Image 1 (cartoon, rainbow, N blue to C red):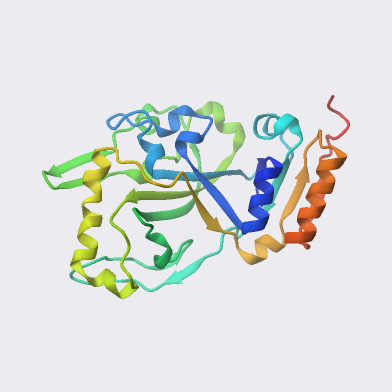
Image 2 (cartoon, one colour):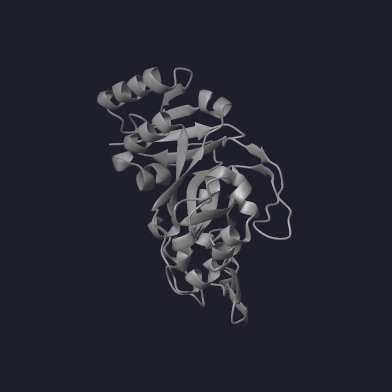
Length: 266
């Protein structure tokens, strides 16, 4: 199981959409997450979106205090495989988009938004370290005037040791600016479709922002059906009624429990 402490509003959104929301790194409580040595303080948050969870089954009082309103929110638990997976055929060609295919959290047809392209989606375990070369690393390499690379995969995977108590896992999406999508998947074979995406590196060097502020991934059907919802230590009778109503409407098989700390905290 992976667990997320949050408020009732976020629970309602998750139950209604059957999706988890990935937020920009710029929205997280650790301000150093978006920092890069060569591209600025908030660079990572422009192109890296995450949803933060923990694998600690035992209730953690600091989590209730940090991530729920007055410890009256909920802890959502999802069993493996958590997020719905798809199998995509690879695309290998001389011109146009090259795509490795395989098992993925998002289909190729869903990767391309009006002004962005989702490079990668994955589930990672946070590495806790005090190594500044990892925490505040240089990510940009310029090979030629028209050839650039960015180590975006190194962003959003490290945190300082004083966060280690969280034992955090996170769903992460790396998203870059791009041209609009083609009308058909087959059109990815056209050079004129792919060329503007190559130019995305130039837009990234300019720090171009995306039009989206968050991103969503579909929850696996079995995981959704076996969801566990734990109400916080200071939950009120009205909160219990709300969660039961949400369960009845959206997820009748979810398991609802009340924190064993309930009644112990004033």
